[in-house]
Image 1 (spheres, rainbow, N blue to C red):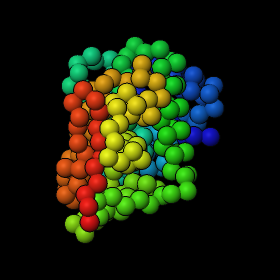
Image 2 (image 1 turned 90 degrees about the vertical axis):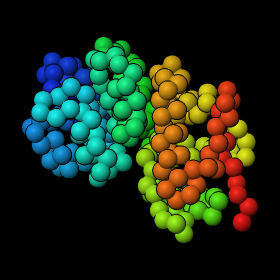
Image 3 (image 1 turned 180 degrees about the horizontal axis):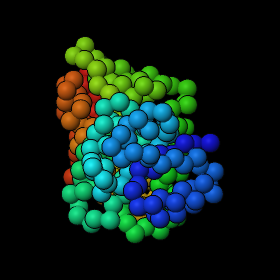
Image 4 (image 1 turned 45 degrees about the vertical axis):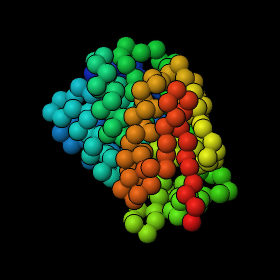
Length: 228
């Protein structure tokens, strides 16, 4: 049974979401003190976190930063605000998805199921280590390392890189990536993919690899191989 931490201060909505998720056999936990969310996170060790943006004391962005400083656990944001910068900020902080309130519960459960399948199943393949442009990619640990250094990727970033490298030197369409990541493109905005790829490229820049992920305008992305 997967453990989910729901960081939501609206008591009515919290219990509604908890009851619905529990009916899908998820073990749902809430926050006991919104001043010390990380204490609950550390003790529960959830498999996925759902965070509202507007919270008492500190907002959801703050807690996302705190969680990301210690863990790559999948994170879904909930928000009643409709400003596009909220979604961009969420993705830049390392969130895996964003759900706009009010939402249809089927959409939320579809997102949760897709993320859990992707995060906890795709690393079971036989090949865990890959080499690319002189770097070693460890899909199990979500690490990319070369002689310059090592970077840690989020689950989404690691998955995107894996999809691109499986078709190295070939263009992977945006539609294909969105379907692979979220399984149904109706549940994710095109901008979410852009933010994730840009964040991946920025991290790869730290070890001199960002230039090898190219954008093909109107087509998609391509991971090119440098000859060594």
